[in-house]
Image (cartoon, rainbow, N blue to C red; front, side):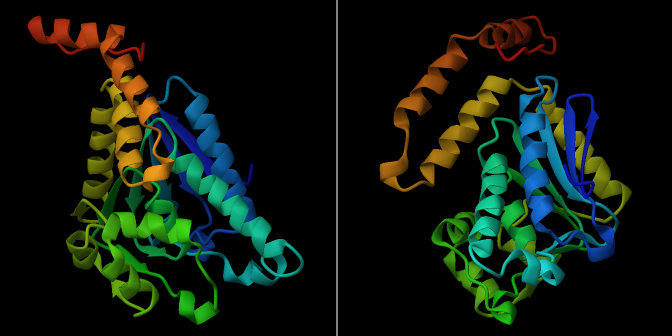
Length: 262
C-alpha cells in the first residue's frame, strides 16, 4: 500500500490518513488504490468499530487530485477509465463499509476531497475548512453516480454552485449548506470533538449501526436499485441478536451495555 496512506488504530477507532502534506494531500492513483485497500483492512478488523478519515498536516483534508500526475495517470489509451474506476472502487469501499465512517475535514477540501467526504457517514469541519470544485479549470467531467453522491448531501443547487459557479465555501457556508454537521475551532478542540464522537459511536451496537446505515443509503437510491429484502433481513437481525438482549438488560440494570456484534 502507498506510504501516502496511513492506517492507525486507537482501541476501537481506526484512522485512515491521507499523507501527502507537501502537496496538500492531493490524491494520486496509488493513493486511490491505497485508500481502497486500507478501508478493506479496517472493515475486516473486528476490533475496529468506527473509522476516521483525515489529512496529514494542518492545511488540508484533501486538496483534490494530484494534477501534476494527470498526464501520466489520466491520459493515453484507457488511462482515464482505469483512474476513474480505481477511484470509484475506493469511494464505494467507504460508502458501503458496514462501520460508521467520519470525515474530519481540516483546511482545503477540493475536488476529489469532496468525493471522499460525501462517501462518509458523518462530516465535521474545523474553522479552516474551505471547499471548492474547480472542474471547469481542467476540463474534466463527472459521471452521474459521482455527482449523485454530492447532490444527495447538499442538493442540486449548491452542487451547481460549486461545479458551474466556481464557488469557494468557507466554514459558515459548509455548515449552512449541510456539507458538514458541525464546525469547531481548528486544533485541539476540533481533534477532541472528533475523538469523543468516535468513542461514543464505538461503544454502540454494531448491528444497529450497520442496519441504519444500510437503510438510509437505500432510501437515496433509485427505486429499482433498492434491496428492501436486505433491509428487512438486517432489521430482523437486530431483534434476534444477543446485543438486543444485552441492551435491554443493561437499561434495566442501570449500567452501560457491552455489545459484541452478535
